[in-house]
Amino acid sequence: MSQNPNNKVNIPDVTELNIYEGGVLNQISVADLMNNDVAIKQLINTHNIKIQEVKSANTQISNLTSELEFHKTAPFVAIVAIIINLGGSTVSAFAVNLLTAENSPKYSGWLLGIGFFLVFIGSLATILYPYARKMFN
Image (cartoon, rainbow, N blue to C red; front, top):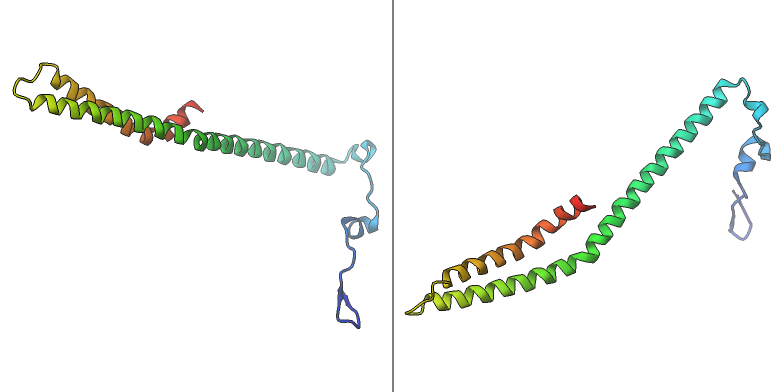
């Protein structure tokens, strides 16, 4: 880098071509590779590294796509869980009201059990959804 009298810095134009091969990029021909074990091994190693990088990138894309789908569907699962919990709470409250009456019907205990079960399932839905998502993806 050189400095002007105006105190401005000039950055030289440096490219790969200027650094390697004296500014000239030579093509590799098949004749250059014939009986050149070192060049062939290097070419194969470079190819294998690129294959591994592509596989890694595809795996990462798949994982990120799956995670994006989870974030898109999580609000839906939460809404379904809220509806199930509200239904279960309503059934439980109705069952408790029937159980505390003087002549409680025989099915009021079953209603209470169903209400508790619905609340339990609604609560588990939000907790177990991330694990179920991993099993189905």
